[in-house]
Length: 387
Image 1: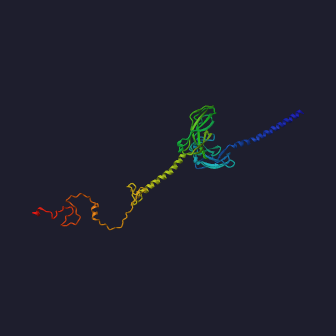
Image 2: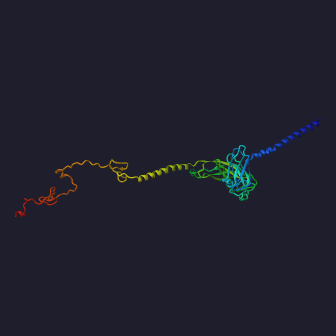
Image 3: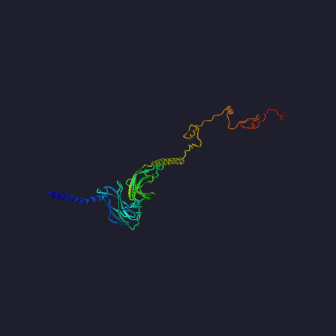
């Protein structure tokens, strides 16, 4: 009886183990498929095409209703990513696409030669929201091919401390000068070999636009297990203002992101306001001076600098001449002999000699003319008459 019971228990246990193993074997492929679907994927209708043609780019596993950017990039590979950043891509021929409700998309992309030699990829990355990207191998027919730069060994850098932007804006930035900061971060070498002179990529983005990456090399060596503080300069364009995002990438992987709020250059606004006020005022003053110079003058008025009248008619710096009023002519009054002797004459009066008397009466043979010596009277005795 005991043997029968033990054999029945053993058979039941084997049956249960078989069922559990079958369930695990059946669910494993579904789990693998689900994990693979979580990663964004990119597929192409053609693996090679020449300039002027087009290819169809399809994607799956992306976030629903997400804006993506598609670019053909050189000096890139799916394993290492876009080494030169967007500077290695044909940005002018890029296309934007939005995923559907299931996270899939399909879009035609024109073929263009990137600024860097191949190997090339079709690079798809998110524009807004959480960062995600995917690459697919593509060959541009007729484009030069060059080997990718060698890596610095098996050393790997990871972010150890949080990033920060150091520095401040000066007075020139208030008037539109390019704002600049120092991007400071600390990384550690988690690999087995030292990393010498690593090359980082620093990108700045504004709004919905993709980051503009720039390669910056740090001079130094980070040994395995050690960490180092690195400072890289970051500079924006002249007159930049608003909310920016500074990103750090190494080995095709984004290590950190730091927001940067840039104030508006109010000095430029003040300059334009003053320019709009001063220039019209100067033009108005010049125009008034020209009008005052060329307008006709009134014959009864004279400029203020040519002699001002001290009378009551001078107003506003100008002298006004009143017209002369002629009174009705009257009969001239006959002067009396007494008035004639006392009336002033226009000629200068001189003292007369005793024997010289002016004569105002009529001239004749019996009276001498004015200004002549008078003859002696007839009754005056003379020597001749007495003789």
